[in-house]
Each structure stands twice: as C-alpha cells, then as structure tokens.
Image (tube, rainbow, N blue to C red):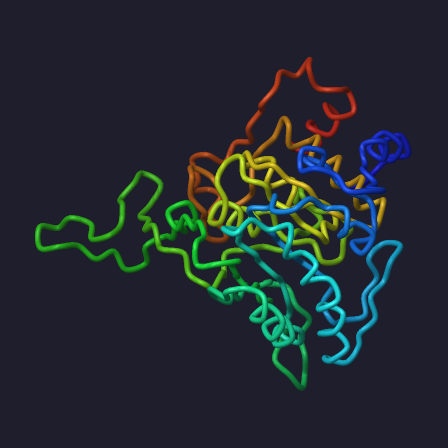
Length: 327
C-alpha cells in the first residue's frame, strides 16, 4: 500500500496535534502526529480500556524519517522507564495492557512492567519469517506481555478460539465425533486460546494490509488482542501506532481508537487504511467468528470481504483502491 501526493495532503489534514490538555471525546477515532513525549501530559485521565504498546525493540532500525539505535540493556530499560509510567494515569482501573518485545528486550520489559502492572501471561508468537544463521538458531519469534492494572479485568476466551483441522479424528463408543465437528469442508476442532501463537503471518507484499513499515504487526494479531481484552465500544489506545494496524482493527471490530505516531507518512497510511476499513472489514485469518490456522483459506466459509456502504457512496480514489484490494 502506498500514498499519492494528493492522498498525503488529504489524509494529512485529518491528523491531530495536541497543544494542551484535551478530554477523551476529542481523541475518539483520531491519529495524533507527534512524538509521544510531547503528548503524554495532554492526555485525559482514565479513558483507556485496552493499551497496546509496540515500541522499537533494542535494535538499530530506521522507521521512516526517524531511527532507533541499539543500546545496552540497561539504557534500553531506562528509555522504556522514561515513558511507560507516564501512561498509567490514562488507564481505567479495569484496563488491560499488551507490550511487545523480542527476546533481547523481553527481560527488560518484564522487569519494568512488573513494577506497575499485574502480569497475567507472556505470549510468544511465531513470526514465520527470519534470516537463517550458521552459528545460531534462526530468530523467528517475539513476545507480548499481557498485563492488567488490577485483578479486575475483562477477558473473553470464547472470542479468540482457534479452528484447527483434525488430524486424528477420535470417536466415542457410538461412533460420534469426540470434541470435533464433521463438515462438508473437512473435520475441525475449536481449541482454547493458548499463549503460543503459531497461526500468524507477517504482512508480505501481496497482502492488502501490507505497508513499508519495517515492523508492521499482522491485523490478525491485533484482532486476537482486541477481541480477548475489550468489548464493543471500548477505547483502544496505541502510543506507537506505526502504519495504523491497531486503529484499523479496532475500527473493524467496533471499538473506539486513538494512536500516536511521529512519522507523518505512516500517519497518512494509517488514515488511508482506516478509510478503506469503512467498506471492507475483513481480517485475514479471522472469519465466521473464529480464528483459523495457517493455509486454511479454502476451508473458510466467511472469507468473502464485507462491503459496508454502497459503491456510489465511496469516493473515487477509494473505489479504485477497493477494486485493487479485491483482486
């Protein structure tokens, strides 16, 4: 997905910049184009139900116009500690928090978040991609720390079940399927969500959600987080929005959202994706109310993309995007 000059100008006009304290209503369904440190003191208190944080990992990497330089583990922990505690006032007492990390920064993240939150679990997800190494194991996993403000929090396990093909179809004494369903499309079992996610695919060039952001998370990953730890109408907040995946998925799933991103190009990409989500709310790998394992598109009944508004109501530029998007 890319931006034309006209789109940069049009979507750039939608971006928000804060110069003073605002109330929560001002932030509903917006993208803030500023550095996080400039915004933290302007945010209202206790308005966030779900906080998703995907900060730069402790790696040297370019993020559009900005870059992050690898430091020592101690310096990285100090950097995280400079902004994470300042997010605490925006959280409701029942809020959930998810913080992403790689194996290098995971220990530092744990040592910090356990001072401020109740750690509920550590999720490890398979990135599937990864460069091979001759003198080490290929690095293809990342961690997500699942935390809560208190022991009073919302979690909906039924909303994030995984549908798997049955390899060994056990039957009871009467020959009935045992804990699985027999369908015309095959044999499947709904499994409880675990803290090991192996069904995700990092966005690649042919996926409609793909942008040039170097660390873009899959929409499917955010769908798991949002469906498990928020209700429709809840407020989802992302202080390192990137190209907008958190906001886009929140919109598709009927949540309120706001994100902060320093790079204007990524902000405009986020707004373009949000505009496209108005007429297409599909999430790859999630249909019929369940998540599907990899390489199972042929078995899914609800894999056709949703159209939420009539064609003549869609601006020409978005109609062109929709036509390309559906190919």
